Amino acid sequence: MKTLLPLLAILLSAVRVSAGDMFRSIEIDSESWEITFHDGGSRFLVKLDDFDRGVSGYLQTLRMKRSERLTLTEKHSRFEVLPVDDGTRKGVEIKTLLRDPTTGNVTTATFFETEHKAEEVTKPAIAEQAEDNPRENEPLRLDLKDSRTVIETNKMKISDQEVRGLVETALEGYYVVSKNDWIHKYSHVAGMDATGVIEWPISKPPVTWKWALRPGGLAVLTKPDGSAIFLAREKQ
Image (cartoon, rainbow, N blue to C red; front, side, top):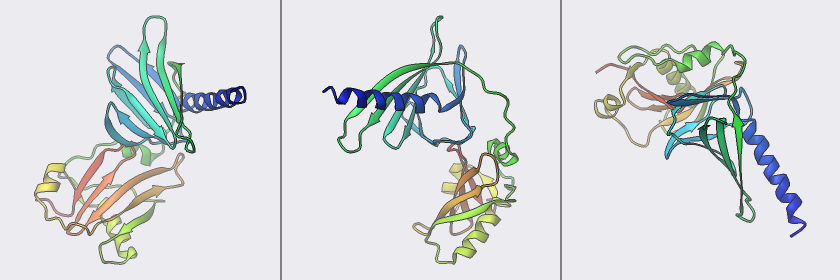
C-alpha cells in the first residue's frame, strides 16, 4: 500500500495539470458560461449534457447555458466541467477521471479553476470563415488556398484524383441546403460515399474540416465545432 501512494499522487498531479491547461479562458455570467480552448495541444471529444458535439477545435469557444454540463474525453481521461459562481468563487469545478488501461481502475480528483480571460487572439482568415453560417440556397465559397485534401475512404468507384476534384468543386460552388431538404428532396445512393478531411496546415493554429461526398452531387462539410453544412450541386 505504501508503494502505491506515491504513484497515486503522481497520477492525480498529472490529471490536474492537463485539465488546468485545457482552457485559454473561462467566463461566467448570470445566465451562461463560456470556455475557449488553447491554440494547440490536446483535442477532446465534447459532450453537452448527454449530447455529442464532436471534437474540440483549437481556439474554439463554447458558450453554454448555466445549467449545461460539459464533458471532455481524451484517450483514458474524462473531465466533467461545471460553472461555479457562489459569491466566494467564480470559475469552473473540474472532476477528472483517469482510467488505467491495464487494470481498469479509475482515479478521480476534483479541483477548481478560476475565471480568467486570455489576451486577444488574431485568428487566421480560414478560422474566422469556419465560424460563419453560410446562407441556405446560396453557393458555398470556401477559400481553399494553401489547403490539402486527405481521403480516408473512397467507395465511389472513381479515382482518388477525381474525388479530390469533386471535393474542391463542392466546397467552392455547391449550394447550401437545409438538412431536411438534403435528406428528403435529393436522390441518395447508399454505401458509395467518400470521406476525409481538408486541412490548412500553414494556418496558425492549423484548421481541419471533415467532408463527405455522395454520388449525385451531394456533400456534407463538418466544421471544427461539430456543426454540419449540407451541400447540393443543384437547388431543388
